[in-house]
Amino acid sequence: MGSNSILVVGGGISGITAAVEASEVGYEVFLLEKRPYLGGRVTQLNQYFPKLCPPNCGLEINLKRIKNSPYIKFFTQAEVEEITGQEGNFTVKVRLSPRFVTDKCTACGKCTEVCPVERTDEFNYALGKTKAIYLPQIFAFPFKYAIDAQACEGEKCGKCLAACPYGAIDLKMQPETMTLEVGAIIWATGWQPYDLTKLEQYGAGRYKNVITNVQMERLAATDGPTGGQILRPSDGKAVSRIAFVQCAGSRDENHLPFCSAVCCMASLKQVTYVREKHPDAEISIFFIDIRALGRHEDFFNRVKDLGNINLIKGKVGTITEDDATKDVTVQVEDQEAGRLLTETFDMVVLATGMEPTSKHLPFELPRTPDGFLADTVPGIYGAGCVKRPLDVAGSVQDATAAALKAIQSVVGR
Image (cartoon, rainbow, N blue to C red; front, side, top):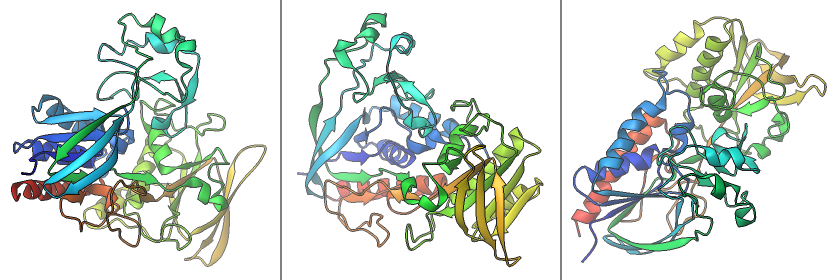
C-alpha cells in the first residue's frame, strides 16, 4: 500500500506552485525549503517583465493559500538527506536545521539592536550586511527572525536573549531529523547565478563596480541595500554611464554552453530601472543577439524608444578598473561597425547565466548534457529551473505540469 502524500523540495515559485496545485485537489503535501523563508529567488527580484510589477504581489496570494490550506505542511531550513523506495512508496529522511527563534517571535527587532556580530547579507547578494540575528526580508514567510549559526557567538554572548521581550530565542536548539512517507516527489530546487570567480576576464568579484544582474535587482528594489537608488558600490555615486554585458558566462564553451533564456529580457527590464532613476544616464548594451521572442518583442521596442541607449553587437573581451576612480573600462569588438571599442563606465552589469542547484542529489536521476534534471525516474519529477532555464511564467506552467504527474503517480498505485 503506497502513500497518497506528495513531497515538494524547494520553496521557490516552482515549488510553491506545485504544492498549491496538488493540495487544492485534496492531496497532502509536504513542502521543504532550505532557506528560513519561502519564495526563493523571485522574492529577490525588483519587478517582473514585461508588466514591470513587483513579484511579491503574486507571491502573497500563494503564500496565503499555503497558510490557509489544511493539506500543506511546510518546513523551512529543511534539506533532504536520503531517499529510498519507489514510485508510490518513498521514504525520505529530512534534516531540520535549528532557527534558534520560536513562534513567539513578533519581529519587533529588539534583538538586532543589541547583536554585536555582522554577517554577509545573502538576500541582497552580498551588497550589504545584517546582524547574526536577522529578519530574512521584509516579506518573509514565516515572518520571524532567524539566527545564522555560523556567525552567532551563541550563549557566550546571549545579548539577544536578554533583549527579547517575548522569550522567543532559544540558543539551545539542536538539529532534528524527520522521516516522511510519500508517494511522489517534486524536485524544485531552482537555479543559481553562474560562479563569478570563473569570469576572471571581467574582474568579477574583484572590481566593486562590476556587478551581476541579480545584484542589480537588489539595487533597484526599495527594500534593497540602497533603498532603490541605483548607486555604484565603490563610493555610492549615482550612475551616469552604465553598461550591460550580455551572455556573461553563457553561450560559451569555456563556461555555460547554453543560452540562459531570460538574461536579455532581464537586462532590458533593468534598463527601465536606470532610466526611471537617472533620466539622463547614458546606457550601453553589449550583446551577441537580443533574444526577445514573441510577445517580448514589443517590450524590446518600448525599451529602445526610451532614448540615449546604445546597442552594440559584440561579445565583451575584457573589463579593467581604474585604481584611482574605480571606473571600469570595457573592450569589445563592434561587429557591425567593424572596429574595436574601448568605453569607460561608472558601473557594469553582467548578465550572468543560470545553473541548476542540483549538483549533489540524495538519489540518482539522469541529467541533460547541460547538467539539468531529466524526468526519467517514475515518481520523481523535476519542476522549473532544475530542468531548464525559465522565466517566472514558464516556471509556474512547468510546476503545474509536475503537480499533475505527481498526482498521477499516487493515484495509479
